[in-house]
Length: 426
Ligand code: AMP
Image (cartoon, rainbow, N blue to C red; front, side, top):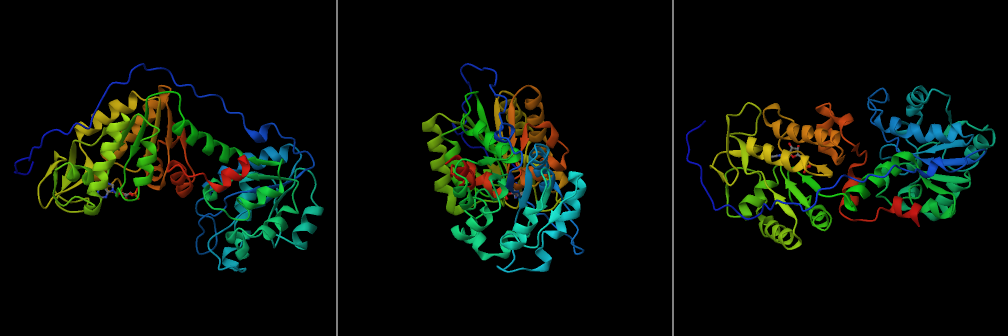
């Protein structure tokens, strides 16, 4: 321990415990749209998200998104449908660019699917029509990058109609772009008033978010972490209408402590968000939502894994020191709340988890989620860094669901109706 006196403040009344009746979760078995549709002989346009990273030799370096689409592709193909896959890749400037060709994805897709995949040099027009006309039932065809046409991102209806000409049925399985009103993700659905469906991946994502935001099993706990309050305001506001408990961790917690009159040293604080933090706490109180802040922190004298470190009350961090992780008491408290929950959402790390010396809080939360899942809770991990963290700790298989869509997931949690989802539901 370094020698300094801990500053003490009156305990704010922000933690309220006690949940009334605790009942078992009711997570109904999933009925997927694609399971009850007959694809036999149908030209099936599937919007997938094959926007995968490539190395300098144009080899796929992370095939997670391809693997995530396989189940839907196989279902349609096995059912005798003619699978026509479409996606974007990278950010071409509105015309063909060899480096963004979806041809780069072909060999990995073929390998993972375990069956041949044909390639069309375009995504609309005669090239596609000719390729589709020669397809047999069960065949798979991959179209060229949709974003080689600027009309894709513009949500152009005529372009959407040109794509639609090659399909009898449309499936959207691209959750990662569900928050975009692009031609192939939303507008195209108008051309298939009755034959439009979610793929397995999309349906898993939609149902997972629904299970959190509209859960009948209670208590529901949201764990929100990460660096800044400013990027999570709308999410927090929406969640206050939906959940019973909000656990706040990561750098953003210090803005709350400062707003409550605490001293936060050199910790990350957004001084222009202090009033907002106060009003969020007030709203939570009005709505009867329990807010849990990390009462203690692991603090460091520099933003470095090798910095000197010790623990401190989070509302009394001395000058020259900064909170980089939640402390042991907070870990115990958060774990207790998580284990009492029937539904848990986790978005954002509890500390600077990229540095091993400040990763304990995030690891503990990931482990608590895994335990809660084992005990029957529904647990959803979403948003860039918490997904990276759960993967890094090897616990992704031990939670109920890990979302594949960063931006789309965050917008859904903010309460925004995602165009790609609304178009199928309409
Ligand atoms: P976000 O993108 O807002 O979800 O924030 C994720 C980032 O927040 C990660 O890179 C973490 O290292 C960082 N982070 C978490 N806790 C802290 C903290 N106490 N101080 C500074 N950065 C943090």
